[in-house]
Image 1: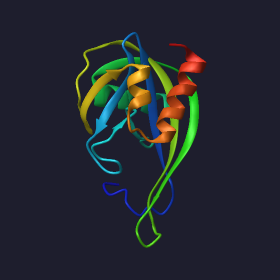
Image 2: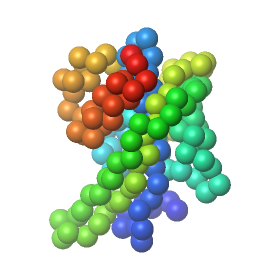
Image 3: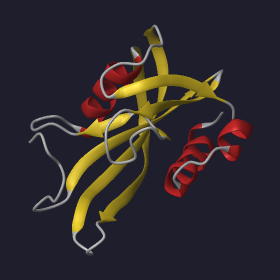
Length: 144
């Protein structure tokens, strides 16, 4: 499915809180929804792919990094309506935590940019409130 706007049912997305010595890894989104904004690396789960496999793949595609998935952080609903009240986007987002095991950081796939941010930098950023909440949950559960 190329166009994810106005779906018949929610789509499953997998996002990853990648925790490293440099902070938290964020990507700048290259496509809607939220194009241009900073977010967790992630994307749509593919048919036949587990959540863990999707998390690893999306991190690798968007950042060039190989990771171990530490576990589940939370599940978030992302529902965006258009001006007429129609459901333009509807994602069920499964967020996992991860640590880097290899690779070289660079933006790829749907990402315009990929960078590490410290906790104070993230606190000061204009991120989606759910992204900030999930990052805090991941750090509380899996450490800094």
